[in-house]
Length: 154
Image (tube, rainbow, N blue to C red; front, top):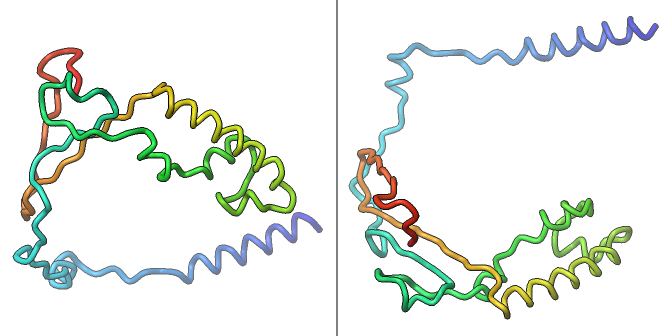
């Protein structure tokens, strides 16, 4: 009986799958149907080049670096993966009010906030970021970011 049910179920799956055939077109037809894109009206970026952000003392760095603090970054933390690591499934901040996990989540979050505050206050971590933009173009540019000097830092 079990084997017959499985066979019937798989027959049904095969029939469903077989019904989803896509009609393919030839290469010339695909090229004719290609979207017509215009690169004439692309927005101009706010700046062109590279910008560096750091929470380090920027007075010791020779090129332009914008100063950020760890406290600037705290509002952008996504806490959901943190709770998942502790096997508390749910999305932050809703998990703090979860019927089953809410109490444990609130205690864990309070401990994490205390530790995070210590990290920020004592500057136990350094935040660094580099981002950039270039003029919009329809061509592709490849960049090679191989350091010229080993151990050189931004």
